[in-house]
Length: 223
Image 1: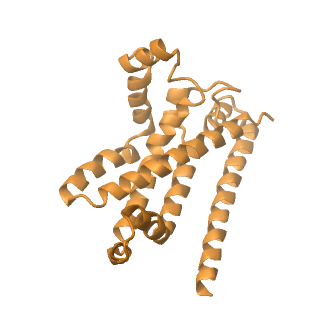
Image 2: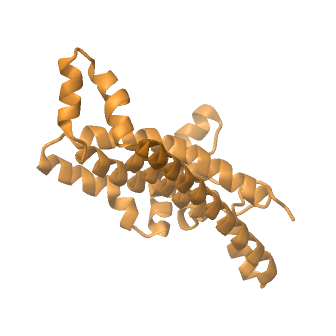
Image 3: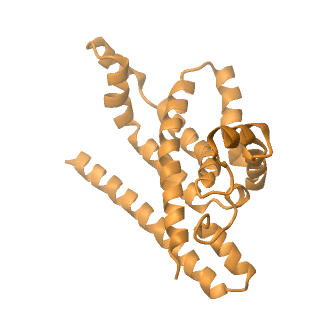
């Protein structure tokens, strides 16, 4: 059994989750403090990929990154790098589709944060950066963790946009999702089932680890 789709899926999901983690926290923290009207407009823009069909997201990315388009052609001519049909092309797709989950979850956590805690820190002479990292982030940890889990799971299971921008090449761009589809197309139900079970096992282990961490945290807090 060729394990490349597993390795490729995990590295794409991991890299995407790291990118989305920082982008989501930055966007959520910045937008949560804006006026409601501005917040509403930005919410629509940032969460649009959540409701768009994955094939539409893939088409939009191809329109931007394809070497036949101005930006993709410029990158290819300047750096000699194609932005599509490589393994890391899938990162563009997974970041776009996973970002709204991270952003919305973290923004909800930030909006429910008790600002009097931040004000107390500032009255003690602490900087805004110190208050953010030492007060707000720990208090909002559960929401941030939930957003990270959702982003990783979404990136790991992404198919539509990934297949359009990265394609399917065994040993190069294949992921678990695209492999399952290709095996199904060739009537290899046994092979497809193996990869489905692998995906289920990864997701279950990841969620179980998060639940154990949360249980440990609650147990420590009870003491």
